[in-house]
Length: 224
Image (cartoon, rainbow, N blue to C red):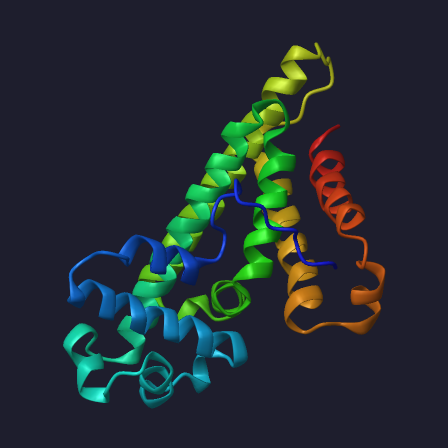
């Protein structure tokens, strides 16, 4: 899949870039804390959380190991905090994407999710595949999933009502479908962007076609 073309009017989708932006001009302690988190993101882009060491983080951040402990008691707390905050960031970006295109909210949010996954691969790997090891982050990610799924289900129910459909789908059935479809999209993006399955990479070289496929999965899977 071709990288997204970035323009000046686009929202920040890279979480490290977001951290750098919000910490700029803040007191030194806040900048150093953000610097450590940004370094952790960089290390996670190259390896899984099991290989994330305090030494590697500090080397990337350009700080001493002692400085690390001024901000985080250990790497587990750092990761839990980082992933919890990242889940909230994902939630905020997807909300904004949906609000900007209310007539096509699921499609807009799907595009935003793909872009977020692509620009934050290490963090997304942790959320999708290693989240159970981090209780606070797990709860935040579950809230993100639940809110997104409820948004999709509400949109589908409104659409069926507006279309005057006589054939309806029970609310619980729509919720089950949405959870299943969300898992399918996560698996697709994991294979494409994380494990880099060569067949899938070749099939997904056309970015717009890939986004269309993922949007259609939601639209067709949720309708009668």
